[in-house]
Amino acid sequence: MKLKILVDNQAMSNFRAEWGFSCLVEAKENVLFDTGTSADVLAFNAEKFGIKPEQISKVVLSHDHFDHTGGLEWVLQNPKVKVFVLDSFSDETKQSIEKKAELIEVSKPVEISRSVFSTGKLSNSIDEQGLVLEVKEGVIVLVGCSHPGLEKILKKARKYGRIHAVIGGFHDFNKFDALEKVKIIAGTHCTEHKTEIQKLFPKAFTECSAGTEFEF
Ligand SMILES: [Zn+2]
Ligand SMILES: [Zn+2]
Image (tube, rainbow, N blue to C red; front, side, top):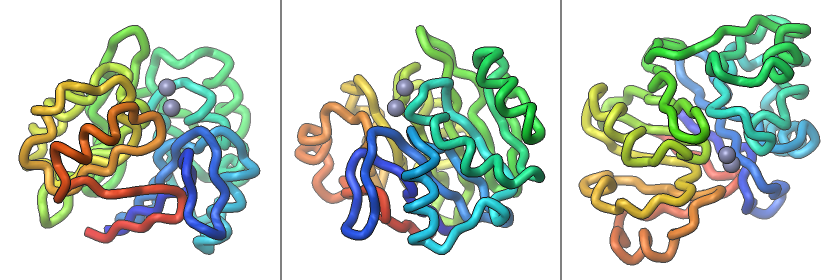
């Protein structure tokens, strides 16, 4: 399974940076997790990887914030795409998807594709879902901003197996014990305590930006 970071606050040379997050999961099908802030940057960076909207079967949106839903238009150029949102997303977001593609509302944990699962809705002030990927090394967890608390998302993900890697935005996260034994920690996007995480887990901490690829 390959993961390609399409949008992040930071970017490798040749890629564009913007405030937001998007990661392509190349499993049995291509599943896009979040879409960044703009269709422009998503399209630019996807093209650098040689990815076209027609190659994407499914989209999962972690939560209803512009820096995760803003690039949707790019992938909605593919009318066959299925878009998974939480049932609590705004009518406005739901309608903009329904006009162009199939909308699937999620609340409970659900299989999105083979070896690709949604954690289901985790609630706090902002509802969010994470993605759990089954690989031979264990479980990979993809997160958008982790508004409900990264530790809560990880707790849900642990039901699927030992956590090998966690990648995405760790907003407000400071319950660092939850990262114990995780082999790859790629806190990016809105992660506030990057330096502390890097200090505590120097081996596991992995830099990640638009253009980064992971293979499991
Ligand atoms: Zn957010
Ligand atoms: Zn965000």
